[in-house]
Image 1 (tube, rainbow, N blue to C red):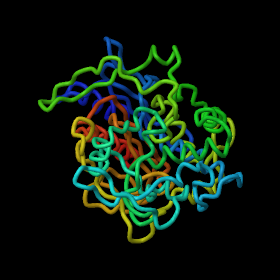
Image 2: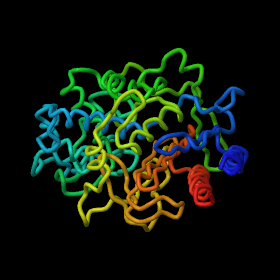
Image 3: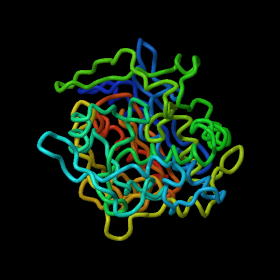
Image 4: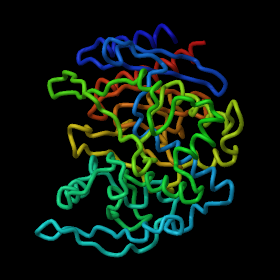
Length: 390
């Protein structure tokens, strides 16, 4: 596995088009199978497995874990109106088109948003990156995007009545506010106490420490001709008004692998349990029902994302809160596995059937970069092939 995976990462970093520094790791329920990196994190420094990266939407699964912990404690009802915890949710209405002057037409929702809907992305919130109505709304209202880390950025209308459909969006940012309301602490403090400490995730948080900054990978932008440009000084907001549970964490491949291993190990961590086995089993199943499926994400803001879909043509569901491939994947991933990604081309999977998980990351816009997707897929395939060859 090491020889094959090392070669894949080095081909990616030296390819045409090239990737910036890339890191990948794989694990079983008990131990790390592979850890490797290639290329540079920036300024001549090599990419390493402890390089710090903005992990964007791979934050979502961590926030969902905090939600599930509070549900286990009996302090949070997943099916109660989430406005019982965060009253601002009661103000949110449904977008029912636009007037000629781009003023949004709004109406009351047919039913309240629940925390379960937030985790499933069925509440109705979207992202301007992937939804043209949201992009139009933000242009017309001059509203900040969620990367601003502000409460105002979350006050966007629903795209449909809660529970009626699936739309990827700012749902988990709201779920993070639910956690804060129930726990009486900032989201990052809850995560440090109840997730990061039991798992030994010492390099993960919403705010960069001085030590983390010395290992921080530089963000890059891919031009249409394939060339890479470093985005000087890029960081997510530090000490933001809202610690965004949908995208705001910084972490390392080593730390995120510890999180993946916990989900493989039925919630167990090296320094204590994080979730109960029955909670993990419940959260790792399809929550959308037999007919509703997730769909491709259209790249509305092309500098931030291509059109994106994992395993095109394969039916995919959503759990609390991961994508589920309903059929075996061509990489070797078992049907029913958990996975998701982050905007700067970070990807992970959790195959609880085979007991294998992995993480692949770089710092590159736009999302779903073809070279990144190809390199990640090659890496995952090499992991499974090495195991079946034993």
